[in-house]
Every structure is written in structure tokens, then in C-alpha cells.
Image (cartoon, rainbow, N blue to C red; front, side, top):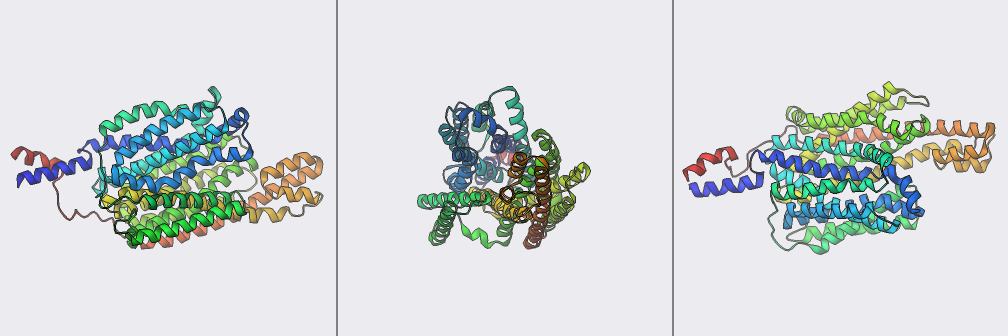
Length: 531
């Protein structure tokens, strides 16, 4: 009996990261996440330098920027479920290696084509790392209370990474060449690879039945087409090059779902969506990102083009949002225990909606106090929402499906972000353009061109010069502010819809013991001694 108990304890200790070492494991996982999160945004400030050096065409420049998130989003389910099959640590370490090699390749790219290929490989590495970090975290922290704290720290690190990317990129560009924004990854990878191999526990799913290779490729191709189509819609492109990948991607995703329902051992167990908490949490992630990612892009344009702030000043104005998100992540576990998933996620949506409505008071002149209050509420509310949704989703997923569940969560995040940019960008354009259809004293052709974007309106106004140029410039600013207000109201409506959806989440944080009670690592010591 004692031998059986000892074996069970050893099994649990391996799965849980050997007691106190689980916090060391969390540090390693957070460093991995920080690297991927930084790389998603660090290139944005380097685009002008890349353009000057490599001279890419318009399409090539678009692929340099978009290849990384596009490839990463499309491969999340493939590598998340592959990790469940062959081992999550193994996939994570392979991701580290590929990420380091691709970073070196990108840093020393001599042509746009080589940089695009390197960015694609970075996307593959990111798709290996992202779901693996979250699924290993699910295994290392079997106790839900501790897991909630770990997810809070994990999500706070993600917020830091998103904010640090542009700031780090700007610092490196002031002192080095543009390739340094990629080269900085290599030392971190050289440290993370041996440390991860030494400290991270291996875990995998049940491994029943063959891995569905066809289904994995179908999911990857479907998501690639869907995300590509959504990104092109977000850029205002509505043609065959947009609709064809969107339709093909949607068809492949539908066929993938049908295939998974028929298989005895599916790649992704879609029965997870039958659990209200899981499906609701995924829906909340999509709605939160749908409502807010487009706003971040529009806010950056507002700060730079309407308030005439520099890129560095813009980044500093957005920092309070990041700090608020960090504090919400760190406080998330306590809030979840006290209020439960339903009230926490619902309150997060409502708080974010209040912040968005507050920001409708922004006009053509700078109001730093209003913006600070709005961004603080926005960051805290958004992170509260995402934390509660991610934690509920992971806790509802079976441990053997942790990689697939993490991949579903990350894919929902990416799709929500893409759809949000497309939807809110369309709302913004619809509210902005009509006001410039006929500006008194401005030629009709110039007014029509100004209706494409605020940046283009400024270029047209500069070419016109004189009173007509100034009239067009002021009209474009006023129309942009009006469009911003309309977009904020639509976003608030989406957030309130998310609050209503969150009412389907569990009222309290369930922390029941597993069906077969196993001794904790601390209890294992006397049992092993008696054995």
C-alpha cells in the first residue's frame, strides 16, 4: 500500500514541478512569454529604418510586419495539440531553439525576402512557445488557488512585454542598427534553453489514438486564411484577395470541426465547448479583444496626429494602461477568490465600458488628466476581464487537453484582435469619411482623398497650402475626433454585451479536490520514509 502511495506521490511531484520549484518554473515560463510578447511589437518602431535599408515594396513591407502574428496565430492549435501528444516541454525547447536561430537570421537579413522568411520562422517558434507556457503552467499548478496567482503573474508579464516592445525598440534604434531589435533575443534564448531543459517538467496528454495530422494541417490552413482575410479587412481592402482567403479559411475551419466531431480520438475535444464556463470564457476573450484592440490603434493615431505628440510621448501616455493591467494581473487571484469568475469578469467588462465612455470626452485639445484616468480604468478593467476568462477556461479544460485549451484561448485572442481591428476600423472610416465629402473652399478631388485617412488628409492639406489647406486640416481633425467618439460608443456596447455573456460563468471559484485524492508533495515525505 505504501509503495502504491509513494508511486502516486512521485507521479504527482513530477507533474506539479517538484513542490516549491514550481515558482522557479513560473519564472522560466514568464521569461519565455516576455520574449514572444516583446517580439510581437518591437518591430513597429523599426519599420522606417528597415524601409530605408532594405527598400522593400509596399507588399513586402506589409508581409514583414504581418508575417509573424499571422503565422503564429495559424499554428497555435497545431503545436498546442502536438505538445499534448509528444510532450509540452519538448515543444517549448524546440520553440526556443527555432526562435533563437530565426532571430539571428532576421538581425542580419540583407534583403526583404530573407527578413520575411525569418519573421515566418519567428512565428513558428512563437506558436510553439505560447501554448506550451500556459499548458505547462496548468500542469505545474494543480491547485486552482495557486494557479490563479500564477496566471495573474503570467498575464502581468504579457502586459509588460506588449509595452516594453516599442520602448526597447526605440532605445536600440537610437544606439544601434535595426537588426539589434532581433539580436537581443539570442542571449535570452541561450539562457532559457539550458535552464528550461534543467528545470521544466515534462508533461503530456493521455496519448490515446493517432495524432490527427490532416486535422492539424486543416486547422492551420483554415486559421491562416481566416486571419489573413480579417487583417486585410482591417486595412480597408475588400476584394478577391481578401474574400478568397477568408472564405477558404472559414470553409476549412467548418470542415475541421466536422472532422473532429466524427473522430474517436479528436485533435481538439470539442466537447469542452459544451461546458458553459469554457465556451463562455472563450467568448469573453474574443469580445474583450474585439472591442479594444482596434481602439489601441486609433488611440495611437489620435495622440500623434490630433494632439501632435511624438512616438515616444505617445508611448509614455499609454504606459499607465500597462501599469494598471499589471496591477490587475497581480491582484487577480485575490479578486477571483473573493468575488468569483462571474462577478469578476462581468465587473471587468463594465469597468472597461465606463473607461471607454469616459474617453469620449476627449476632443481636439489635450486633456492629460482625463486620459490618465481613462487609461488606468481601461487597463485595470481589461486585464481583470482577460484574467478571469483565461483562468476559467484553463480550469474547465481536462489536464490532458491543456495544450489544446491553451491554443484555443490564444487563437481566440488573436482572432478577436483581428476582427476588432477590422470592425472598429470600418466603424471609424464610416464615421470619418462623410464629413470630408465636401469641404467648403477645398477641391472635390482633394476632399475625397482626405477621406481615406487622417494621415492622407494632412498630406493633401500640405500640398494645397494656404487657407484651403488649413481648412481641410481642421475639418479632418474634427471628423477624426467625431469618428473616435462613435467608435468608442460602439466599443462600449460590445463590452456591455460581454458583461451580459459573463453572467453564464460560475458564481464561485470551485476548488474541489480531484476525484482520486493524492497526497501533496509535503505529505509525501513521511510516506516515502516509511516505505
